[in-house]
Image (cartoon, rainbow, N blue to C red):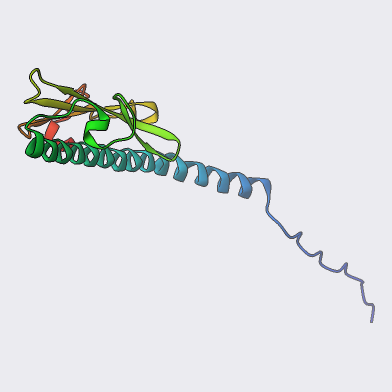
Length: 152
C-alpha cells in the first residue's frame, strides 16, 4: 500500500480582515451620526429648562421684594444675586449658556426679565425667554415654525 503524504491543513489566521474592520467602523460612524444630534438636542432642552427655572426664580425674588418695599428691583443685589449689575450668568461649570437681564420700569412698578442664549446655546431654536411682572411669558428670536408654547 502506497500512502501518499497529504500536507497538514493550515490553521486560519486569528483576527479580523480589513473588510470586517471597515464594516465595523462604518456601522459605528452611522450610529454616531444618528445619536449625536439627538444628544445635543437633549442637552439644549435641559439648558432651556435651566433658563426657565432661573426666570421663574427671578420672578419670585421680584415679588418678594415688591411685597416688602412696593417696588421691583433693577439690580442683582436688590434681588439677592451676587454682582453689581446685570447680566447674571446661567451656567454649568465654567461655561455660561444664558444671560439673565432685568429692565425695571420707571417708576419701578413693572419689570421685564430676559434670558438670552449665549455660547453653545446661541443657536437654540427657542431664542430668548422673556417674563414680565404680569407673569406673561414669551420668546423672541425663535426659529421660524417654532411656537412659544413648545419652548415654555
